[in-house]
Length: 203
Image (cartoon, rainbow, N blue to C red):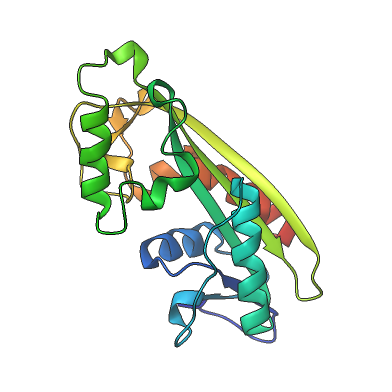
């Protein structure tokens, strides 16, 4: 997955093995002065375990590993959903919450089960995304984006990924699973963080 016109521009590897996230990040980075590639397209590529205590630490772990592996500048994100009624869970563990045997739909079901009987006014949540950039010389920069919403009582929509079908965004009167990718990108945590990263990348 690379940008259409590469020329002699430096490479920027998007440090994710999640192809859905890779597609979203490449779309958000369109137009930066780099040839984009996704780590998922590198044979036998691996990322380190996310052992950091913060989103920034995890994003940097991934970006550093991708930069070492490819010799290119690297961009990685770490993101999660923090639910008020659950004391900020799933948080850093959002992508693995409930165990590795659960898929996105399974994690959504688990979250809805945990919130059973919780009234709408206590179902507030926020998505958080931190983007880390490690350049080819080892320089590091970190930016962040957040967006608030409410957890629905049932999934709505087939779009997006992760917890999007149960994350209701009031200004749209829809969940992130019901909006187009372009609509989501305008307001999402990842869209905000990547727009900040674009400025650092000269895009």
